[in-house]
Image (cartoon, rainbow, N blue to C red):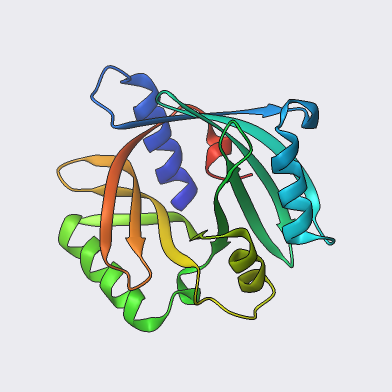
Length: 191
């Protein structure tokens, strides 16, 4: 049922591109040689070994261009984003709703219930930002004191009508921002 709903939503958004949209994100697969060397070195440093199916993408969101490494590590899907100079922007780890702490999950649920008559969550990512050494410690399960944690949620929600949305919440599950999303390609949701 979720796939049918999402297919209908995707078709609707494709057929009616003239409607006002807040976010258009396009990802294109690129060769490793096109990626800043600094970005490649940082991925190798942070994840040393055990990366599976590493793929590089160039992402364009509005007028912003970035590079993204997508891969599987320790049985989870990761996305590591860099600017065009190879500076680390964030690490995103795909998680289930059950991996969000109870109080944060309650806050997120309350927000969604207040904003939408109905909604279907397609993807949740724990978004990490901070200095590279702090991120490495977090990934090694040593500490999260110096790491900022947010949750990025991709969903279909019905307020007056169905739309695709990207929600950003803080580590406590409190609302930060929400954007309507025009989906150009499906690979920016699932890789």
